[in-house]
Image 1 (tube, rainbow, N blue to C red):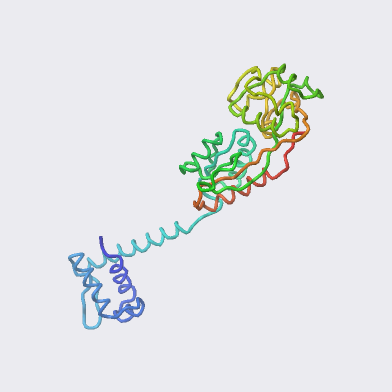
Image 2 (tube, one colour):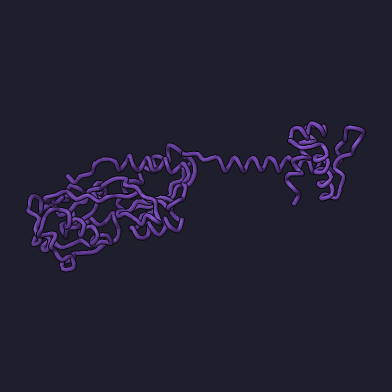
Length: 301
């Protein structure tokens, strides 16, 4: 590999056309310039310039090396430009969140991509454990989870709080929510059901529900497709608990009854990334959108 310092000295000499001026421009001595040229000629095994009195003429081999030096300088400048160029509206954005949040956020992210076509949105719906694993491994750059992760591994901030809703068939409207009622109704189970039920019953302010043994709740069905979980509830086959964003995106919401308890229950959402990892500026654009969409104080009315 040709020494890039020698190449730059040679390129400057050809551009300037004079040894003394080249030395001044490069903050070198004239003998130092001559030494660089001699070392480059030795490395190329060809004379690159033909000295005549106080001047010189470039040889045919010198022209080829000069073109190479120009290309090398251009490629280096292009590389530096790419490294420093960080468009907030261009590039791939890889993020992950729960299925219910994905239903809420994906249309907004697509609208952002329509506005800035050079953005490439990659959104994955996943449970907390997988989101944190993928953020740590680097396959996902930004995630939203529902519990505070290890601060030694992750950088996190509270981005919003989302209401959880106890959802029953419409025929249960205005009925007092009791353990007996829920046992009679039966649970529509799903992958996050136990997590949501436990959190809801602990925080809803109803002592009877807080003392429920979740393992004893009869199950009326199970489904792992988020957009289908509320369908059996709407058909009167059971109850479940889901974030409000899942309810908002259900087309037959009029067939549901949102149970009323002593206290509203909200789940904290954390925006997470790998600790000490600097994300591209486009993620600031994404984060701003997430905050805007999730900033509303969500309640189940």
